[in-house]
Length: 148
Image (cartoon, rainbow, N blue to C red; front, top):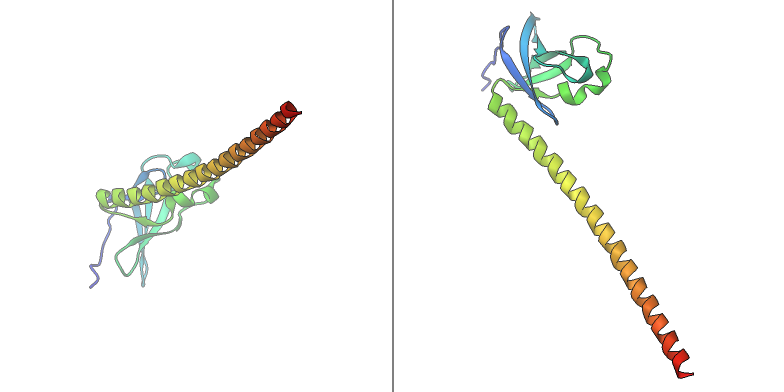
C-alpha cells in the first residue's frame, strides 16, 4: 500500500551520482490536481553550473524522481549524471545507492584492466615465441656454418 510521502519546504534530500552524493533542499512546491511538483536546490555547486535547481515529483511507489531542470543552465547538457534519477530523504539510503554505483564503476574498471592485461600478455607471449624461433634459427644456422 502506498505510504503517501509528503515533502515540505526546507526538507533535505540527497542525490547519489557517479562522483558524489549531492545534498538538496526543497525550496518550493506547486500543487496540481494530479500531482505535486517540488523544486529543490543543490546546497553546493554542481560542476560549472553552480547551485542548480531541479524539479522533482513523487511517483506511485513513493519514489522521488527528477523530472526536469527548474531553469536553463549554460552547461545543462552535461548535468544529467548530477541531477537525473532518484532522490532520497534518508542520507544512508543515498549512501547505499552511491556505493552500489561505485561498485559497478570499479568492477567495470577492473574488468577493462584485466582485458588490457590479458591482451598485453598474449602479445608478450607471441613476441617471446618469435624470439625463441629466431634464436633457434640462428643457432641452427650457426651450427651448420661451424660444420662446414
